[in-house]
Image (cartoon, rainbow, N blue to C red; front, side, top):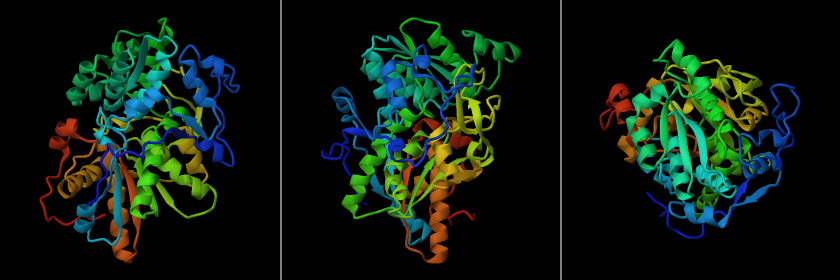
Length: 438
């Protein structure tokens, strides 16, 4: 098994890739919820810092990464590209499987990539506090860490079901100096409404977003920060795919299939968007699969429509696959994928036929995760296990058809703080057990 040391020089990109520059057509623009007219950039200034807004609307192909952010990235990037020889042997497949491992970052997931960039932009404008929501806690941990690096405070509204399922993530946010609250809660008007109706409300990312946005616009020197969905966030994550392209060249590899899990779309976009350039130019036939939970199937069961990104309706209208802003998913352990909507860019690419959408049950993904642990030695986050389930399916299909295939997927985070979820849901596979039937 060949690994790339994350300290190895020459692989750290100096820019982000903006896929909008290469799209034949752009997605419909965000709308002002009051006028239903295309949103003007200045209308976002009470919520986001100006530097972030400029990146959100940019059509430039490459956006330079500031030196101070590159220095912060260099502590853990480039992340390893790993040949999953153990998984391949276990599945007895002709498919060669590779994964980009983002769990080596400070917060244990890919989320730190955009958190550092957003915290830096805020620090350049004199912002003192960033508010945000978090589902499983990876994003909240990442933003708390990033704020600590650039001298800001982080206020995190954590979905109640995850707050209680994953105390380790709450503790990590606090260790980084962040303030974390259960959502919905009594500290905001947005949360108070749900809290008073049911103090044990499980919460949703939509509700937590409403609380975080309200907190941002009601306090001076405070802005909101989002860990997925928006164009700029997806662009920040393309550092993953840009690194992977260089590392694949070192292997002499061009993937036939690229896979990522999706909740809001950031880790999928981060790996896949840089690889899509050739597909957009008609130079290859690479496939791209976005994998979501059956319990929150925005791509496979949602409507492509204008909808709010939050539950109360404080945010602009985004044209995206959505289950509706009032949708409250069951408290599955893949909390980072419990979002009612999907990134407009990912939704757009699904509509164009460039991305395939697939959904898996919680039972399937925990089975896949245990196989991965026993064959590759890494416990994946439940979110990342959705990608692994699809990888296993594709590898078994390749075995059936005797087709050589190169599969690349994003192992977007580790599951070391998700032990309770595995204890409650794991199927306790033993070494040597056959792969589960699909």
